[in-house]
Length: 417
Image 1 (cartoon, rainbow, N blue to C red):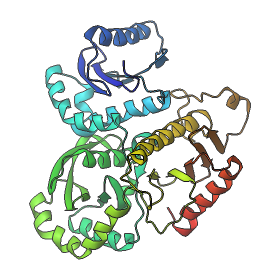
Image 2 (image 1 turned 60 degrees about the vertical axis):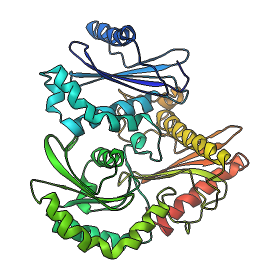
Image 3 (image 1 turned 90 degrees about the vertical axis):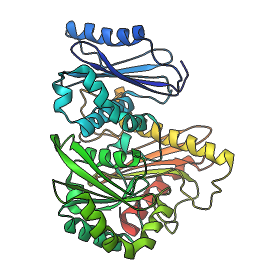
Image 4 (image 1 turned 135 degrees about the vertical axis):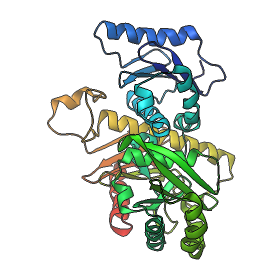
């Protein structure tokens, strides 16, 4: 298999009937015998009262997860950056994406396999998005990708008024799939639900308005809500969660222009910062190539591999470098979280710490770093934030801690996030 290929299998847990197979980085599908073998070894282990969660070969890693004793998900990755942490996050995202679109009841009580296969096709585009690395990190952090804009106060006022007029408490403004601002009750939703809703909107084809039924995997997995979305300018959408009323036509004809036409310029300004995630006026050290900041209290993230606005984005070698930065940041995040910076709410039975020395100490690490010939990485953990940075290789190793602390100060005091 190709060294970048990933295969995702979904089967019924009781009979092992394949429901779908999705892949990335490969033009061929797995044979039925391979699918049967991967599922068979898991079923055999279960019959022997052995929980098989993962294994690795010379060039691949396989992870199994069973959800509600009904759905088996298997992922096989040949990527050298794959880890048990990242692949388990992938399987959680995939199952919750299925719940989001078709609801938990149809997945737990499977009455007609062929009908379920057909219904699951509606999830393919969303699931494929999780297999493909993108400009977002929410699939890995389980938090919500956000952007910082100077006009957030004005946009917040418009959003609150628009959401209230639409008879809802749950509203969100998105640019390029990232949250610009949201109502107070939107932020009270489970972070995984919010992440999935944003990912869903970003995965759908561009449309002026939508009325989309959704289930919230954490908040309402069996009772659907209506997700209404409206494209305000190309790339910027406003979304609301509501019940049977109001009608899509009423909101579109009476409220969209009324609330959002006066702020077209601030809306367009959101697009100018969505790749960098924050305005060019926010200064960062010139040695930083990539940044991931996680607000642990609000479950929000700030993520970019285009830190400095003056870089020439049309140079071919730079575009390749952006891919390298993205891969390096994702890889370092999974390394740090699975080895050193143990999350406070981690389920150690599912994803135990992989570093042996950690079990011998009563405290956890709060900083860690890696050094290679092409880049350096540094992570910093505080009570409210996690900060991950990718540096140019010429940045002195001893200075990374100071730069990281100054960077964190920028986003906690000067431009609070």
